[in-house]
Length: 145
View (spheres, helix red, strand yellow):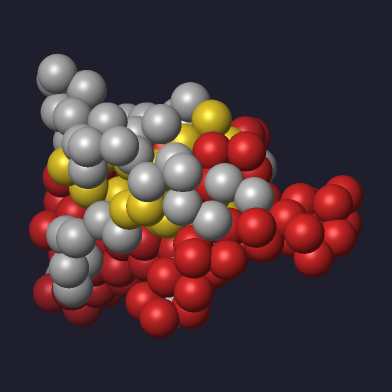
């Protein structure tokens, strides 16, 4: 399975973004409102500068205390996020996420413009669906004999 197939299976292809000068509190409220675990930090909605995740906020809270909520997203985000393209394989993406210990990855086109976002959950869900279809096909082959 490839990334473009995962993107097609998602309910929405919208990526929730926030500017680098917005506060961490604003980002947290955006994540709460959309019920998501991260926002992409960008100036222009197409170039991912970083990702601000729940984990980033927790680490900042532990390091800075409640004052981190007034900090800019650019001060707390994970800069230069790992990205992928539509044609990459889901297994490779899952391996990168697992080894890098991150759960969100912007999808970019050949010019580096963001066209989507996939999560570890998206990849696992797609892989489980693929395995289920393979199982059903094998069962059908066995029963047909």
